[in-house]
Image: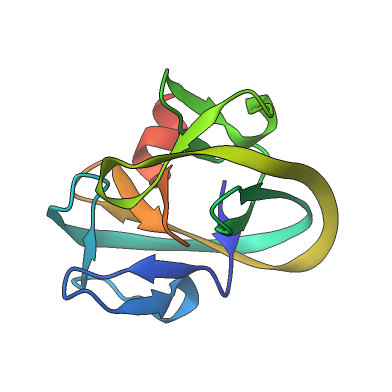
Length: 134
């Protein structure tokens, strides 16, 4: 349901901030470049995560059921394969370099935002609300 605690989220002002430091009321950037207000912050613990690395060098660590925006559709992280193209900031897209499952055993976070998608480590991912509607 979440992202690794050090995942950098693109903020509305153009800065980046670890998801663990984001608070209710702050504003993040959506996948379309619009501002989205943080309505809630969720946290938990996970023992296993997925690591997705794109050919542009972007890399994200997230739970297997976290939604990721591909060119064709929104998919859970564990449904993504190396043929998919992943949407990144500003509508660009990149092929996958590698996908792996890793041991993690740490804190994870997710945001509930006024929209549905945010940019995490440069990659368009869903928020808590869209994840629970899938």
